[in-house]
Length: 167
Image (tube, rainbow, N blue to C red):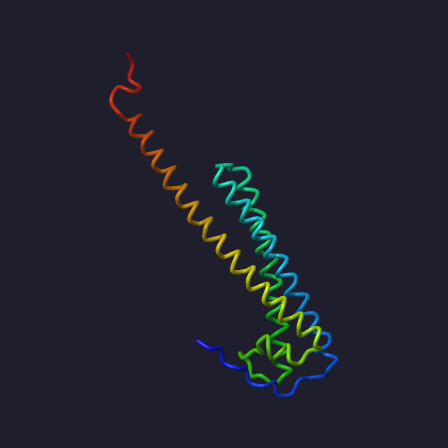
């Protein structure tokens, strides 16, 4: 499916606003990119901890993952607020926001290129983190089934007549 072209920006506020907000948006995307890189490294540690059944490392990695996702959520909320504000100043109705290309087209060329490149790399990093997270979920589920099977076998062996009877 071919993406639809965005409508041109009606009347962008002042150059000063876009000169300030464009680089701010780049910094937010860069912060998200760094956060997703840290998240992926953390997810890899979770995967290793599950694979080696190291509960201490798993707990530490899970706590770090929660901390990172909290920071990422905060940055995402700030990014959305900035994009919504930019969209309002550009004359977009409430609920309609400018896309990356519309924003980039109003920014200085170096800022526009930084926006496009950072967004591209961020999309790739988010996709990689989703894939790693899916692998972890599958691995954790398999480990859980394996442990349940072991527990069932042990319970069955211990519940047989004569296992712990007095002699």
